[in-house]
Length: 225
Figure 1 (cartoon, rainbow, N blue to C red):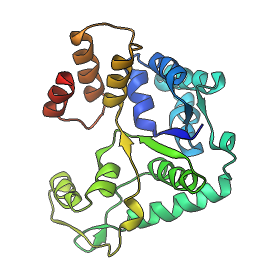
Figure 2: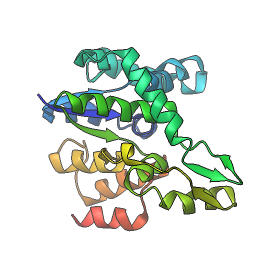
Figure 3: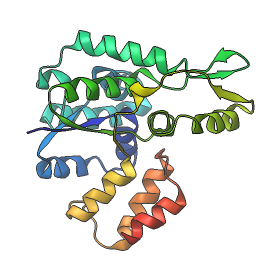
Figure 4: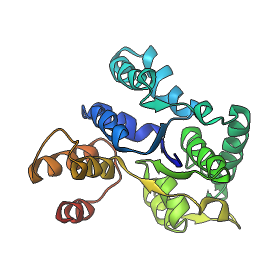
């Protein structure tokens, strides 16, 4: 086993809100590897929402996946949590000093997102093939084409934003998948739980509506694949 799918909070919450967490159970059976969440993602998806009544049910559903061993924590791969935390903090500090608006740094990523990148970095050093499930556009853009962030942040803040970091090479080594693409994989493997092109369309639009950063054009392309 050399493959690890690392989950950020967004896809887990997205699938939970759409009643699709069960596809992770079925996908795990076809996956020659592990589904991992970091302690920061566990805090965001289980520990913190478990204390809020309107989010409690979703947190319990994700916790059940952890208890069943569908999702696992990094220690299952002998990852040192202190080292993971150190790398997470380093990446968090660096990522949040990439964009400036009026000479002030703009925080663009969360600790949970950076913990996923940190874990992927550690696992790659020991020969694992990693893929990060993340719905948030900003982190993916930071890694794939950081200068697009200037337009994204400018549009979001209605002010001119500029990439000021000199070296972003640390963010270029990651591969990502969105919850929309996860449900497509489930559809292709026959484990979605629903049949037909209409079902595929329905789950793609459902994941978009709950936070997956995917365009209508991308959905139409996936539907034709």
